[in-house]
Length: 142
Ligand SMILES: [Zn+2]
Image 1 (spheres, rainbow, N blue to C red):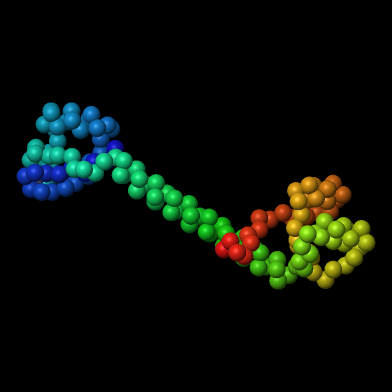
Image 2 (tube, rainbow, N blue to C red; image 1 turned 180 degrees about the horizontal axis):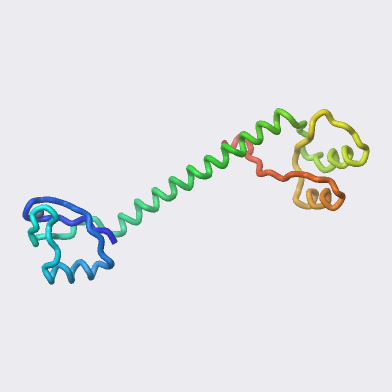
């Protein structure tokens, strides 16, 4: 764990790594801890607890997670916009429309997109109708 150490002699603070808090006490007793600047042995731990260090690491991690999700959402949005511009929205009638294209050889100028339950997607697949399932973000979610 990382401790911030403080030198009483020259007021220098510096970071040092220890395998445990006991290790710090041991090294101090053996006079193996010295200031990086003045080599004084009057070195103390400051109030920087491992808890606080962990906390900041956690916040940093959460921040990068949100960044990752934002990036993924942006990709999905781009894909969604492409679909919106190039496909016809059929809403909840997706399975019906997909079948009518498949069985009636109805030629749509555009492909279609819409909502389908996992069961409907499965049924379509069994009937040999190929669909792509993509994650969809509602506009209100942004
Ligand atoms: Zn010092």
